[in-house]
Image 1 (spheres, helix red, strand yellow):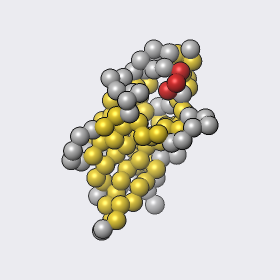
Image 2 (tube, one colour):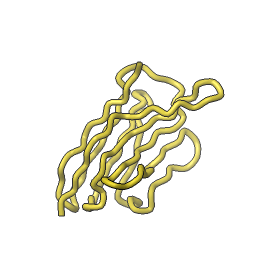
Image 3 (cartoon, helix red, strand yellow):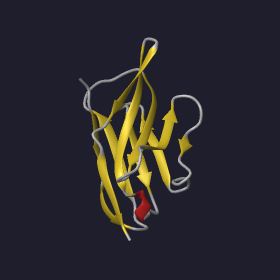
Length: 119
């Protein structure tokens, strides 16, 4: 079974930058959307950015202008460039790929990577 392997998290000072990566461990097809989510301690899972095959890219209001989602179609990889980081961006970040399987969509998840922003 293909797994989504995340990397790039860590500890950074406020104002700094990090780049998260999410790469499938094997061959995968039928991906029609890629996204990043995050979950801060004591809070619900939040959509950070979503990049569909067609249609517009969407961002959470709290990250607009600071974060950029990008994809590598050849690898089915998805990246999240995070600039001007704030302490409130501290969370575990999860990537997901939506895979079409017939009439259904299977949501694949990464294992999560911790991002900690110090003030």
